[in-house]
Amino acid sequence: MKKLLLLIVLFISYNSFAQEQDAWVYFTNKPNASNFLANPLTMLSQRALDRRTAQNIPLDITDAPVHQPYIDQIEAISGITVMAKSKWLNSIHVRGSQSDIQALSNLIFVNSIDFANGALNTRQIQPKDNLYSKVNKQLEELVTYNYGNSDNQIQMLNGHLLHQQDYTGQGKIIAVLDSGFIGVDLALPFQNLMTNNQILGGYNFPDRNTNYFSRHNHGTSVLSCMGGFVDGQLVGTAPNSQYYLFITEDINSENPVEESYWVEAAELADYYGVDVINSSLGYFGYDNPAYSYTYNDMNGTTAFASRGADMAFSKGIMVVISAGNSGNSSEPHVGVPAEAIHALAIGAVDSNEAIASFSSIGPSFDGRVKPDVCAKGLGTTVSNTSGNIVTSNGTSFSSPVMAGMVATFWSAVPSLTNVQVTNFIKQSADLFANPTIQKGYGVPDFQLALTNALNSMNFTIENPILYPNPAVNQITLASEIKNGNLLLYNSLGQLVKEESITQKIQNFDVENLNSGIYYYQISSPNINLKGKIIKQ
Image (spheres, rainbow, N blue to C red):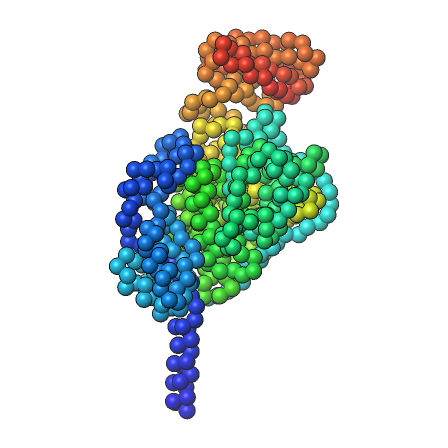
């Protein structure tokens, strides 16, 4: 009997040792980094370099690619499959038996190995209690075919006021990391994006091809919150931004390799010079419970994708992530990578700004405010793959509503750094002074954020900006014009006000003007700018 028990124990141990595992292999160095740093266009596009220069972000060794001979040597080893790579973290994601992966530590260029199953690592890790079920791949969408328009989700953020000032995300590029974009190339709400070449490209990481109008419908609805347009039914929060579409999610399974795909996509977004990343994806539990995270891991430094999100932010990118839909579950906290230190984690509220019960809560395990801010995620107006305008629920949709507004706000004040953008957005939110675990800093007011940003004037004014819009008693012109004129016309084309421009920041009284729409003209020897402003 004892012999039989011993055989059973040995059999179980052998199977555990031989079964396929996922792990990250970290390298010691990048031997050719100096060559790449001396020739930065071999690492990054000119637009990416310009973004770094504008924000005073220097290039460093993390920008250099992983040393390809290291990858080649590991790929040649029997029993090891290389699934993904990361230059920022100087690592590769591998799959193989525990013994084959552990043997890689004998290679002189391997610094360390981190198994997705923490129990297999030599470093001390808390045992995982496996209480957490895998993430719902549908991200708790609930589609109801109630047609309407998107007024509420934009007006809640005062985004319509920026739109009225012709700030609609122009000049900004958003990368969408999701599960698939079926129908984007054909459906009516995306025709503007396709016709105007606002879809710049993309990549399908699970399939390793460029067929990104494929796999799943989730990213389609997500994109519609930002870039969709059907007159009278749906207007995205950044209809004039440009987009890259990246598939990082494998809808058929839940595995840590999706975190590695996510980081690869973020690195490619950086290469292309993207300004904003939106990702309506989150990770806490995996199909293999041994891979799952616990709340203790939500510290901003443990999870691979969270570290990648913070690296993206360090390169000057705004990283906007759905907080998650686990608010009603046994583990209600914000997950990976929304829990990253510099990610803007977005919770979900309803049309009255009340928190949606499913929206994941904070704080992070180390006590940081999470979610950061909220947008409409209950009854959000979206497009499906057929182009029908429907409503859906989930932080999957509050995140892109917010990401589009981030791009639109940044397009109004393009000289801001991503750190400044983050601060102005948080400071404009209604709970900034008293954040809660459900809503974080609350719902931002992007007109207030714009006014505060312009008033701070810690940057060069590239184009004249007239604000606030709508105006009540006065308007302010921020410009580099020292000799020019401001002309205001009523709806009949009659000149009602003419003022000389003599200062960089100048206030003009409009208290005596009747309520309504006025057209302005700002003219100087070098500038002739026209627009409209609303007097309340």
